[in-house]
Image (tube, rainbow, N blue to C red; front, side):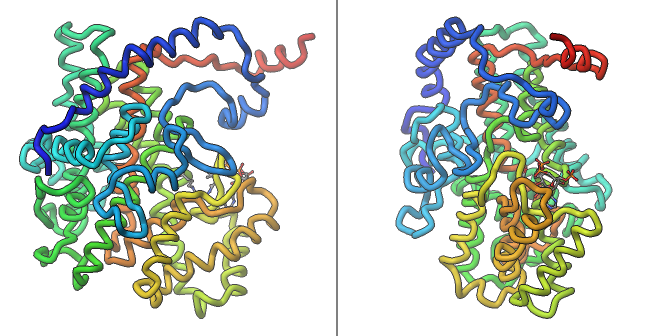
Length: 466
Ligand code: CMX
């Protein structure tokens, strides 16, 4: 990895602040009384759907087109953001490139800048070790505790190292410098995610003993793979017998996955919780642990684990993943039990999620690798049946697959069999978007969030008054 030979992320952000804050403040001053929308009763009573009431800069979500990152579609990101395999057909960018892109509000890093940021993250881990007290406490957690609960605890334990919290307490911070310690904490937190993930995975399958080594000269995604035991030297891992090509593919899958899950505009539960808690000037560790507690809900990030379990269960209950009629009957049965089809539907999207498509492309580019995997075949065949069934069922507004529909089963293919762990990988990625936003929330000086709630009497008065 490169040693500090290029301008740092912090210097880039510092340079952007005067121009961006001027634009922001001018806009606020000029248009502060202009009405954008009227909020309906339905929006108030149905999870604030479509209620345009939140400022979020890094990503936007169009119901048909899907996600844009700083106005770049996912495929534009895939051709523009630097990765380590520029010549391979997947155009898999480094999540570090996306981190730079989001933190700077749209500046595309050079490969050198991404690598320097990668190096910076490595150095922040102090040789790839969790602080001893954090490691010890995590070792003592009940082995059956859900990995997302373990992760939340891990982040809370790391909060002791928050510069923001310490400097706020000792009075050395002011409004102009809040962002600097927020950035510092955010980068430290992101740097620690591979170590937390590795520790939790080892708690699940190896009694807390390390499954692999941190390699400071490798990138962030590589180290997640390494610490969960994806390397040839780890006897204790349940991931074994992968060829060199498969190992390389697994790391690339991890880079792809971590790069595309970073953010999904601001209103989703994990991003919004981070932003809401952060608006009280809470430090990044406490803010993001709230975010991941939201991510751990089955209607949100936990769907990643639910899909894998669902595909395994269905596969063992049908004669063949190619039998579309049996798949259809299975789905109807599920719906008649008032269960949801995990990995399908979305609160905003009304089309197939482009992130799902990018994961499918990963499969198509490796068709031989996946040819005999009945779970992956089932995942693909489900796309031919589930939209039709959900449309006929008539309730769901979006019958198409979301990103969770494919992600977990691809990791499973390479031997990552601990289904409950899937959302932890999601959480590693999701740290990048909401924490980039938190830095800019502090630069723009956004105030504490405090929407007005209404009881039924107040609502009745409002709807009946002339
Ligand atoms: N299977 C069965 N029913 C579904 C459904 C699905 N996949 N998706 C939506 N519905 C049902 C809803 O439960 C709701 O039923 P009720 O009226 O009885 O409550 C009805 O259709 C209308 O829902 P909607 O307006 O289309 O969707 P929501 O915005 O309320 O919910 C979501 C969105 C994602 C929670 C929902 O589609 C769902 O539960 N999907 C399955 C879980 C999943 O894949 N979650 C991951 C989403 C991506 C992410 O956030 O990470």
